[in-house]
Length: 126
Image (cartoon, rainbow, N blue to C red; front, top):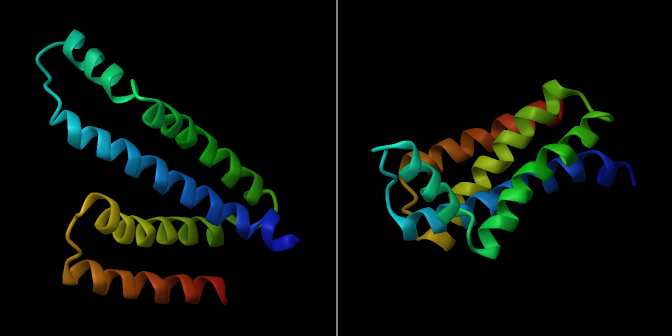
């Protein structure tokens, strides 16, 4: 039970954040680059981003994720949890951005992922 109320929440927060940002990034890809010509154009672009139910719910998930992470922090050290959260999120983003967004995984990303896994293992096993 301890895992689900501590590390489980860290991983769930990271996963929710990754899924939400992938959905939003997909919408941004559909809309194209933002134009900074004036405040109205920027505001309308932001509305267009969250106009679909998927991106609106994803935006809500981005706010829920830190709450779950905060609950986990009530049981585990920040100095351990934060690097694990960031590493886990990075690994998930590299993998799922390739699968879902068809982004290329470079050799640097693979090497970096290996170092992230080693770092997480070192931190977690201290």
